[in-house]
Amino acid sequence: MCGLAGVLCRGPDMAGAQWAPVVARMCRAIAHRGPDDEGIWSDGPVCLGSRRLAIQDLSPAGHMPMLDPTGRYALAYNGELYNAAELKAELEAKGVRFRSTGDTEVVLQSLIAWGEAVLPRFAGILAFAFWDRERRELWLARDHLGVKPLYYMESGDLFLFASEIKALLPEHPDPRVDEAGLIEWALYRNLDAPTRATLLRGIDAVQPGELVVVADGRRHHRSYFRPTEAVDPALYARSRSLAPAAVVDEVDAALQRIVREQLVADVPVGTLLSGGLDSSLLTAMAAEVRRDLTAFHVSIAGFPEHDERPFAEALCREKGLAFVPMTLDGPTFRRALARTVWLSDLPLTHPNSVAYHLISRVVREHGVIVALAGEGADELFGGYSWAYRRRRRLQRLRPWLGRLPAVVRDSLALLVYAEADLPVTSVRFRDLLPPAVDLVDRYQRYEHLQDCIAAYGFEPRAEDREILGAMLADLGDFLSPLLRRLDRTSMGASVECRVPFLDPRLVRRAVNLPLDYKLGRHADKWVVKQVATRYMSKELVFRRKMGFPLPLWDWARPYARPDFFESGFLETRLGFGRRGLARLVGRAERWVHAFFGLVTLEIWGRLNLMGQSLGEVESWLAGFEPRPSGGSG
Image (cartoon, rainbow, N blue to C red; front, side, top):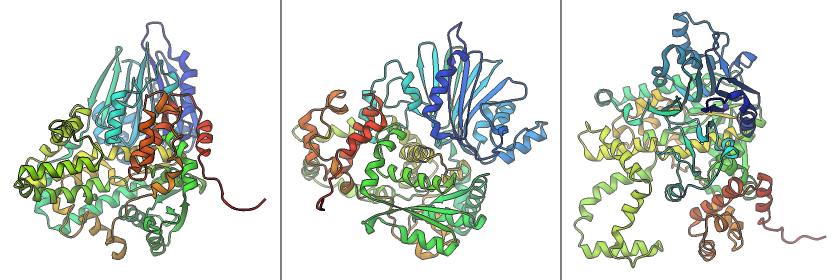
């Protein structure tokens, strides 16, 4: 797991070597992604840079950028390839001789041998830059679901790319907020999908499952994977024909294999154990393979209703694993807030991003470099009752709602708008908001959802098609900021987080399960819970889902002051009205997530567009800390 950066020159008399200092500077900006080694390499118009976090083959043979023996091809790579052993065996049968034992050379030789046709076969989390000297082509690509990031921008005759936006920003000729992107972020809290745009004009993202080829001064975008392409009517019909026990066996066997592969490392491995179902199952399965694991947990101080520590401890006692808890409180949360925003390259979508970063630092302090995490199980297997099960209930209520008199429906809508402080005096007000929401992203999320529902066109039950399609759409939308959270916060502590549930082989199996295996009659994530009962006590499996909530109002309260936004980014750069901001501050407890979003937008703007250093922003935030009361002296 590493970070990468680079430059491709497109002017006739330009050489990549002259931009090596720029690439080195870009690499230093993301040094947290790879503290073990740095490499800068140039050839003709290209210069590649890499920061390495050594996990497999810790020797110099794993140095990057990595060249093939002929010198024609070069690779800067960020990621882990879990089916490397399988692909390596095929390559060796073709006569390829390997000089290292890590997966980087397998990626390099696979691209040489099979070209872009091998991309769908990669089972891992990865992003890379691949240079072909003879064809003078640069390839940029990301894994199937975009676990690993990659961004690019154009500046005159330069094409620049890097693992994080912060590496590109100092080279940007005119950094400004993308106002359409800001509106989209405000509405969806997500700019990682389904568009390439970021919150900064001129900086774009390589999309999940996408290959970007830069040749002859032009960019060519090719998708090698979309979630809809994983839906297979034959596999779905096979799942329908199997006995439920056989389906549970198959999911169990697939997850066992994946966990075993993802425990392969030449450094210590642990797990992020929240105490919830998904991380507990991965921890329990990993304990069957390795007993030297350490489980790391965040405990919420003073709020037992948010604390899952008893469940995490119980599992570790049951499995005989080392357990390392970290207690999080308000002052600790606030001290780490600015750094977490800086790492994220966006205002925070999820406040618990701070907790992810702090526990990742604890992981690293204990000498563990790799951790398994449970992201993706809810989207794949139906874990969000508030979304999927409620959608099913709403489907059953729609015919009854349609029978209500129009005047009753209008009155109910008026009450909802008024309670939410939305304007209700507009003519035909109820017809304005839903289309406006879709217009914000030019119907792209709507189109994506409809494509996902259409992928299940062979399912005869309309309500099942709709819910399965919503789950599939969430793999390319709702999941994206969760993956950003995991990557940026863990790599910010030089820790690699692996996500077994999002292995493309398990994704393919999961999206071809009928809805009954997800929203079971008596349990969400039915098939996952059946697997879990084979590894954990039923008391840990069948309990209320808690998620990872924080006591956000209690912890963000010190910022709810009229002077917090005074003369800051929102006022001076975005033109926010002072009275409007004061109004939001006055209602911050009621609209705490909206308020917190603006707090982190203010922090992001100061860091990225007002030229303030991380230390300066941290000092500014510290000025809002409550003063100790009482005492003597």
